[in-house]
Amino acid sequence: MRENLFTEFKLKAAIVFCSCLLSCTDAREHGVKTTFFEVEENSILFDTLALKIDSLTVVPETSQLLNGDSTLFFFNKSLLSLEFYGLYSNDFERIRLEPEGPNGLGGAKGIYFFSNDTIVASYVNELILFNKEGRVYNRIKLELDGLGSFPDLMVQGTKPVLKFGHKLIVALFPHLDPSNKSHLKKWKSFVEIDLKTGKAISFGDLPEEMINDVYGINFLNFSFVRNEQNELIISFAPLNDLFKIDLESTVRVLERINLPNPNFTSADKLPDPKNNDMRYVMSHYLFQPSFDAIYFNGNNYLRILQKPISEDEFESMSWAKQKTLIMYDTNFNVLYAKDLNSKSLSYNMIFPLDHGYVSRITSKDDDTFKFLFLEKGN
Image (cartoon, rainbow, N blue to C red; front, side, top):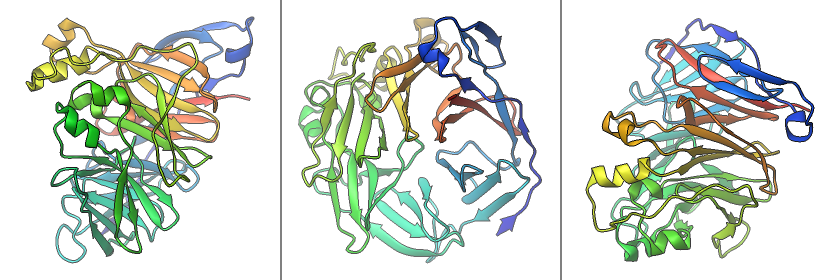
């Protein structure tokens, strides 16, 4: 079923990261206040883009920019629908999917759009391929030894699905004990699925310190991108260093990328690794820094560091963390790092552009999605 809706697109301004930020010392300083941020930086302007949304659209777990960055694609889990919003037009399309039957997609956790003919959905340990009309043409159930009975396939904004020849690479979350070091040794972060044979092979060990020490289930989160060298660049939540896996290699070894200074602080391990109380484990995550997202636009990497909350914030259940934006060049030198005085940046909805990034900002407006542009000028 398809529906059309008039949408309003409002562009207030762009956010320009001028090149003189990185090289000029005599640039005029601007102090700028908006609804979302207060910053003082050389030649930095902050503003927002607002997109009117349908009343039935909810904040999606998975979303993408399509068609030359002119269309926002959402998976609306509550309606079980695909939604396409035109950024520079009034175009809107909603395609409702069938919950049951041969084309049933009920219970899908995440969806990744490659083309009208190739859309990928994840459902626990099952990968489903279907087209834009909602017709399912392949279901692949994964059997992965040593990773628990039903390892989860993870399709999110920070965990895209990658094509590699006739294979797909998907993030994985094993059903193992995150407080058991022998289980952490078995842990794998990815699965490669051969679409011709249905064969699946897991790969991607944890970093050494995450095997030898227990950080808690929240710190087993990670994000990744693929760069132009066919390497996975991986950001593990507790660690300031990045890691890489060469996809061209048959070995797929996890290698550390030692980041040049300025560097940032890694999280501490759990003081009591045997304490599985969820409040204790969660509080440890909230009281520590966490590196929760990384993106790549072909020119630079953008990483989101979340800062620890206070005791008062924890007791009042104000658990959103303040964000730090970190931009690296392709050699992982820090180009830019800025603390934001807001918690509203949605790190799971950041979209790479040719010259920058656009991120959703949480707001109290139920009928509008608001976005922040980060664009590095020439």
